[in-house]
Length: 139
Image (cartoon, rainbow, N blue to C red; front, side):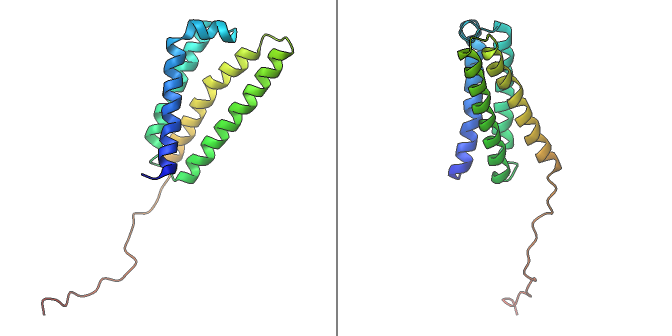
């Protein structure tokens, strides 16, 4: 297994673990983020589903495609977190909703893109490019 494949599987496993933590600690995390506990549970379920699909489908796509999708996801997470922090620092109450909403929608979008990409990936079967040689060992 290549290091990139192991990293991609680890990324999906992290999302699964984070989703489980959100589901288990929904009340505490809801208070921490200032959002209802049910929203944290939904985000946890989305992370579990998205991370699980990522682990399964990462082997079905070229690593370059998976890497681009994961980088896009992580850039979105950074931007959403930065926006949420700015909103919170400005005294707004929507910072938690922004962060949790991203963690609800983005894993499902990533999973849908992986599934769609795997379904539309039509590759011809591998063929031998060398012409077959006549077996001369039994002459």
